[in-house]
Image 1 (spheres, rainbow, N blue to C red):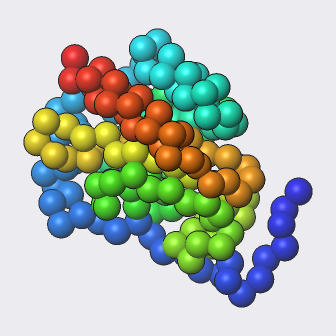
Image 2: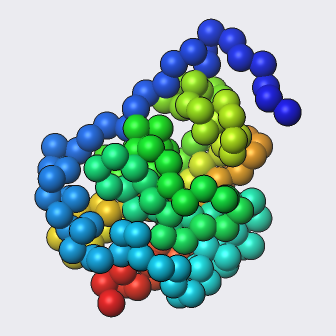
Image 3: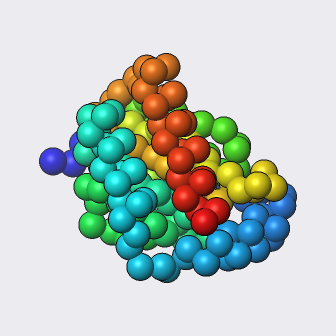
Length: 171
C-alpha cells in the first residue's frame, strides 16, 4: 500500500559525490568485484545480519559511477539501483555509519522513489566498506519497511560484520 504523498515528499537530495571520487572508483574497479558472480561468503554475511537484526533486507552494495550494484542481497529482487537515489551513496560520501530512523521524515530521502515506491524503505542502517587506503567502496546495509531506531548494539553488530566484509573484499 502506498502512503499518501504531501509537500515534504516532493523532492529529495541526491547523494553527494566525494571530491576524490575518481580515486575511489579506481580503487573499486581494482577489486574486480563489480558485476562478479554471487559469492557464498558475502551471502552468508547478508543472511546473518538480516536474521540478527530482524530486517527484511540486507545488502552488500558497491557504488560505482552511476549505480549501486548489489554484490550480495537478501530480501530484494533488484540487482542495482541508480547511484543518485541510493542511500549508500550518502554513507560513502560521509565515510561513516548512516542511520535513518524514518526516511519519510528525512529531507534527504522523503521524495526518494525507493521510499515512495518499491521497496518502500523507511529505516536504513549502513556502514561504509573501506579499502586499505581509506576509500569507501560501498556499504553493508540493512533496510526496514517500518520506522526503526537501531540500537547501539545493533550498530556495533553491523559494524563488526562490515569489517568482515572488508576482509573478504581484500582476498
